[in-house]
Length: 105
Image 1 (cartoon, rainbow, N blue to C red):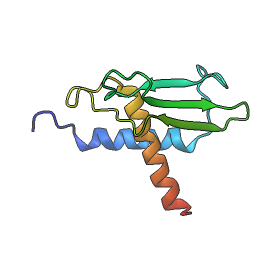
Image 2 (cartoon, rainbow, N blue to C red; image 1 turned 60 degrees about the vertical axis):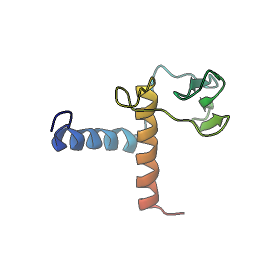
Image 3 (cartoon, one colour; image 1 turned 90 degrees about the horizontal axis):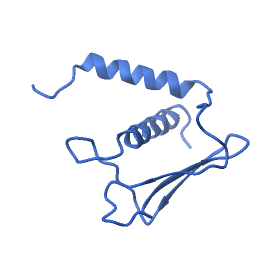
């Protein structure tokens, strides 16, 4: 089973994700109204294709994609260049899943 990580490590990461997602917190390195843009891994030279996140003064968060769906590949296996962005999007997917389970709209 080369390359497979023990289930216990994934369980710890899921619990760490839950701890972060359940708490109200503010990353000290973020500023309001300063866009954070990342070109997608599959840009084919089009650097305008990507995702942007902006936080407003009141703490609302806006997410926009440019030029269609954005893909952030797994590092090493899929040639991904944006492992932090991909991990954050996984956290977003997990947060959406848990919110939908708790409060379906």
